[in-house]
Length: 218
Image (cartoon, rainbow, N blue to C red):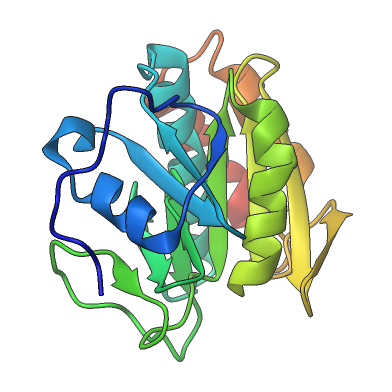
């Protein structure tokens, strides 16, 4: 049972992994002091991200979302996207990716609520995406281990500083780098990288038109 008492926030260090029980983590997640935070829990450690999100992060988030949604639209692939949504397996894990996608014909889409998605009741997302600038080492490290355990099919890390993308396929609790998406067959990660590079000089409309042309030909 989760304690109803307010958590001790005075000595909490954010934006890093700290040891905590599940009940302590949930108390912080429910605290109004951290209502703007992003929450992760993995093997007895929690991470609360409170750092401000800049325009670079926000722009890359939008571009990656465009790429995936335009590709799915052109290829007639059923897809639903969630932004900054929490996914929870009570007592074990929680993650809050920048983007999460449910992909495919047999979509088990969580209902619209104000609570984290219950992974004991609903499937994890097919694809999770983290956009990182200051968090990139963690996105490729402990968070990658968390996503390996979560049951997502694919995990992408976007380095906002380098305008780069790395994709991992996940199976049986292990991940390996891939250069073409397996959950969006035919989508080359090199194209994702090119779109991110184009964002330095092109507006979103120009990038979307370019994507439509590329995907219509493939």
